[in-house]
Image (cartoon, rainbow, N blue to C red):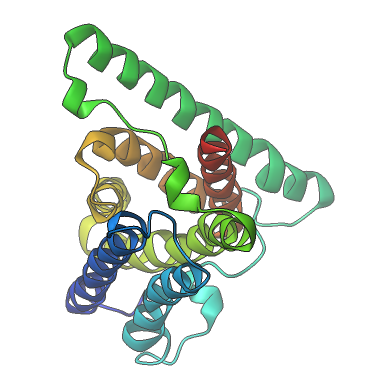
Length: 232
């Protein structure tokens, strides 16, 4: 990829600011006074703030270096042979994402069990609080942001842009580790950082195997859907 470490750093700074804003907005929407439930404006704000990641990719990658969006993974998956066939697409779009999802869920379960046995309750991953989703139309919109928009934007940024930009200076293995670490830290949840790091590793592997954001997007969206389903 043509972008450099400086571009990644500037884009990452913008992303971290956006996540801080998201956290502040969620707190304001759910915990202030009598307003215990987010209103209809909340999902639109969350979606717009997440969209800053796409703005960062455009500003520091696509626009600056005049490259197509396919450079950040917006293309059909590739088979290892380099050819696309119906069976290869089925494997890349369905089978491999389900494998990645299973690995992520199993590793999270093992981590949670170990934390429980060790008694480190502060490091126990917490479920999505039901009040975060709200109710009615707000719940539907926030769910759409969490399950569809959020995973799409994050895969473009963390896998297509960030991981892709680190491979040349660091090599594939170290790029995968660094991108997964940034992915975990960006969620600002200490109790979930290790599971998120493992998930980041799995999604990065899936992206590098298929050269497309769609397979990791499928796994990412499915995991988020499970998370909010448990909150329902």
